[in-house]
Length: 283
Image 1: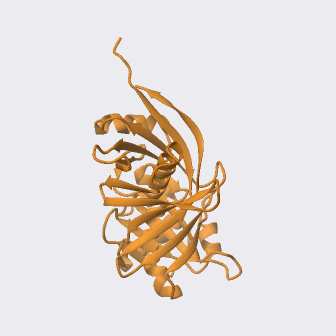
Image 2 (image 1 turned 180 degrees about the vertical axis):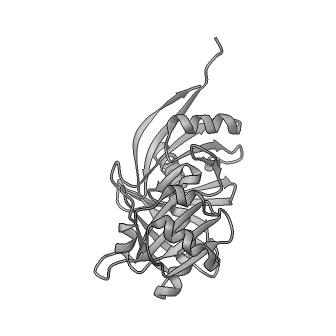
Image 3 (image 1 turned 135 degrees about the vertical axis):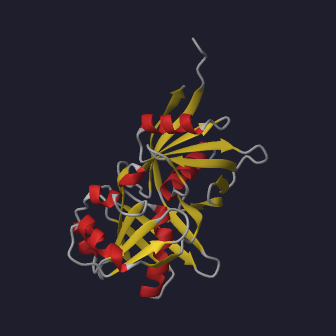
């Protein structure tokens, strides 16, 4: 029998301070990178929305190669996966540096530990802003059918990274009440559909979001950091501000604190995370 290797992993709920909320991600720490087929097979076995693979870089204890896999493919950018990976590193070595550098398909991403009190901290991710452009009206009938609605306010598309359509509706209530048709969404010329609307005036939030991406193996993403890297471009203009508290209105829900650095085209995402499971892979 071939000798088995053992790899540490954990399951982290990201963008939440409560277990079983936010967005789960599996995080695997590897001694060296494995091939894509192996990483995809493990992602399917763990069956989390995203499985993250960390490989420590040889020239720095706080520098890692980071890759993200859904159950069907590798993705170019993943906010909640990066938050989960950061939480894993910070928890395993609490006395180490407060900054981590990740080498990814989307360039160098940094993560900082922001202390809140003696025992708790938030994590701040430095991500690229994702530009967006107004979308052709020809997509409107398909989008209305996909969302089971009669009208939408505006439609945009991302112009870099993954191709997503962004649909703006009139209120947060409309965001919450949408019942998507995933078969119709699969037919759209994009990786997923981002739905957003302004938050109620009396709430502590600025806008609500939902995201549907069945073609990537995730029918509804519980909390998506990278989607908000595009949405801030719209909401900065609409609300005349650069700091936001966003609410992702999925069944599990999640909260993102966001700063839009428009000059440098960067987005700072702050969130909490909770480790709910730890173990070893024997493969």
